[in-house]
Length: 105
Image 1 (tube, rainbow, N blue to C red):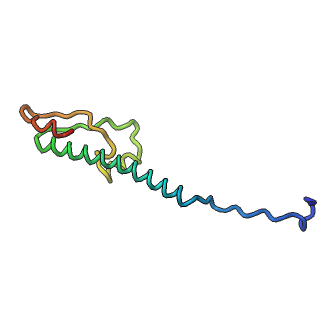
Image 2: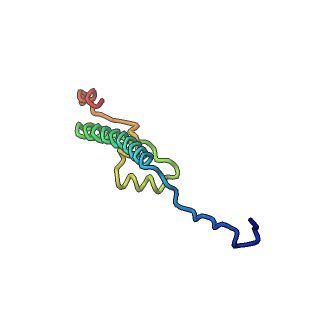
Image 3: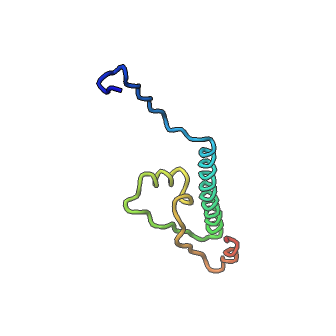
């Protein structure tokens, strides 16, 4: 094998896209579904609780926005709502309207 002689050099194989097994892709899809399911379940519980509080005449305050607010967070809030992005930090209730509070869980 003479490096100066092009006839004796074997061609270098072309680089191919990274290949993944079907098992690893299914595992990745399953993990993503579990994470999204937990996230959506939490947000839906919060949404139902906020709706119950507001229906009873209370008010809800969401957590502070990070400084500076990210474009991605604003986009998510616009499309999905505060329930998916922010946490409730304060609830104000009128007097005598708390019998529903244990139901919020």
